[in-house]
Image 1 (cartoon, rainbow, N blue to C red):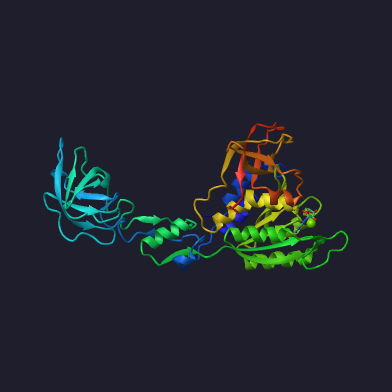
Image 2: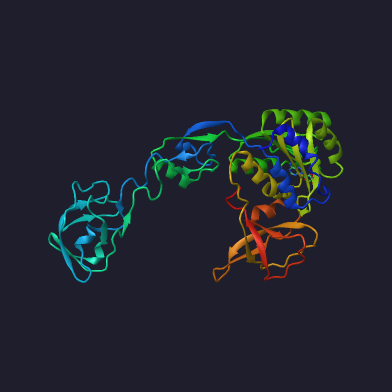
Length: 424
Ligand code: AMP
Ligand code: MG
């Protein structure tokens, strides 16, 4: 990983691009180059580890399964006792249930009643499922056609003792938590949570609980940013609203960078406002200001302030969310130690709406994925697409991603969608 000092220096040299028309992919690439994940870690009980990132491989202390066991309800037998072309009759010597093994060895001419998960008795090498067995008192009759070793699950087949059960970098999901518990491991080593400080900028903003005067609006970005950060498992530091005042902003940027690994702000990076923020940020650290070739979410500032990673998002409420999903999400996951980081999944479905789109930049329209009467997935657009219309994000469950060269879209066309519901 990059050293924070040298990577900041390198940022200004990464200028083989046009900051006034920065392609979405190129911006992601530049950001990805400068991410230095947290390294500090802590021990946690496995029950408290959901959503945390493993800082060390979880090594299996045992073979899984621990013993050869049956994959079926049936009878454990010796294959040599079965006949290739006729019936064999064996004596039932006992039973092997899950948790209650057959004590002893299976001798020639014997069978043991066995249930799924039951330990295969010593001497047995084949399981015959119960549907293929005729039972008559303590005798069973088995026909031909059984393979040696059939219906057996071998010790160590899932995991070998000493092998990696869950790898470092995994953000733990319910299945991982269960797998770790299945190995009898009570504690795991995880990275400490990523600390993210955020604030809103703008003279027009009031916090909820205060009556807005004419021309003032409620600060909503702090709430969407807070919610998105919570979903990503970050430790969040809400620093409130900061006025468009150089001295107050300098104080806020400095405090945020000292308190956190990452600073996220909204507003103040658009043309007109950017100039004094630019001067200020370049005094405090190293920051690039991009006009991304995308809609919505054009202005984006990225860099470092006093060693903290910095994302200056646009002010418009939809732009904030789109840029967060498209640039900040993956970066925060990587910074929190997750590896690999997969981008949000995309796939193609028919679009039932007609979409207005001018070639020249990538658009992230807000869409609603749903099933049609025949059960097939289609997408439609959520009405007006203005970057201030937060309701369009609230109603959407996906982005419709229209690539740079794409023009208008006629109904019925296949479009690329990216799901967001339940992910951030
Ligand atoms: P800016 O990028 O600061 O010029 O803001 C662009 C637009 O987004 C303006 O209309 C702002 O009023 C609006 N805006 C900025 N910050 C917020 C916020 N925290 N909550 C809601 N709207 C905002
Ligand atoms: Mg502003």
